[in-house]
Length: 172
Image (cartoon, rainbow, N blue to C red; front, side, top):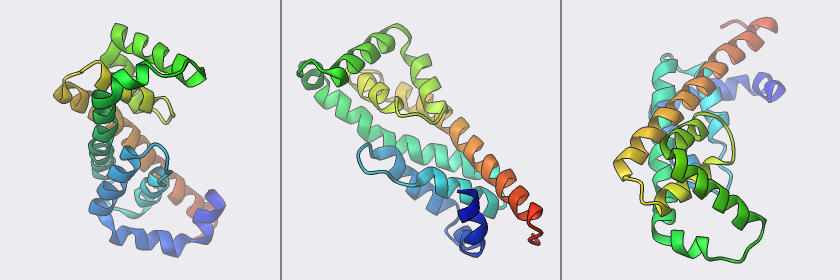
């Protein structure tokens, strides 16, 4: 990824034109999808090096991803019973474990899974919907976690891209 960033540095600098609204929109798409991968984190990383207010990028990214994650919550809310009565396989066992964890420590589990880059947030979001978490509680907890993740990725892009470009002698 670092080599691609250096090679395509002019295109990445052009990402600044999409700005915070672009980061918000792609974060909604990235937070809403489970099956189709959206390069949301790569875009936030690249924009971290291109935009002036990195902290705002992290907040906007976290908000967008949380808005997108509402679709996963609503899927669990509407289809939680159908998921829990499915055929018992590896996915079913993992879902049942997540349900048990969410019943014990739902808010903390959701926050921690939202704050780091991992694939386990989606089952937790489904479980939160199936367990009928308050949508306001879900939104606030996810936004806090997703904002931490967004800030981390944006600042990694800010310091990482600038460091790579400086090391190569590219004027900033």
